[in-house]
Image 1: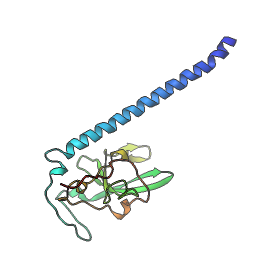
Image 2: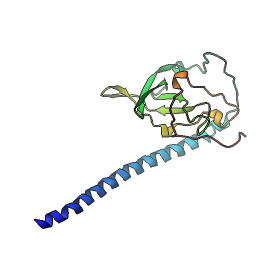
Image 3: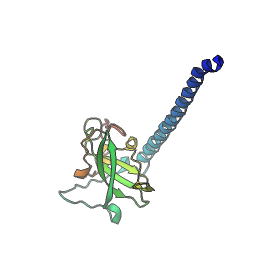
Amino acid sequence: MNFYRRQRPFALFLAILFLACAATADSFAYRQSIEKWRHDYEAQLTSENGWLTVSGLFWLHEGENHFGSDPLNDIIGYVLFTLHGQEYRLEAEANRDGSLFIVFRDLTSGKLTYPASRFLDTEAPKDGPNGKTVQLDFNKAYNPPCAYNPYTTCPVPLPANRLRVEIPAGEKLYKHPHP
């Protein structure tokens, strides 16, 4: 009987070690997925058709500004998320494939992140237990084209998308001078 009692702490230690390794593996896989996303994003940005090759500037005016002829350029709905116990809402646009595109600003804008706004894409909403759900991964928030190129026009987020909270994740302020 004493043998089994002496082995309990060791068994508990092994169980904790196993759980720590499993959590680390999940964290490592997530970090790898973010690194892959960043690599793919940089490749897209610097490609022949990337934002760094844009050479046009169109000034926006007060009020509504429409671009392109795609009827999906309109706001289609919103997403809700909770951060630090507070619920927030972001207006979203639908892409052709059903995924969502969000233009937002937060309290890091102009300090840690690009002043005008940042963009965030999500997968298409999926059916969940409480209706449609999407995953908002702010680690994948990225700068608009005007952060890199002075010949581009960037959208300003809707007033509803100007968050009164810091989102210190995603792409940070681009500190290199424009070409």
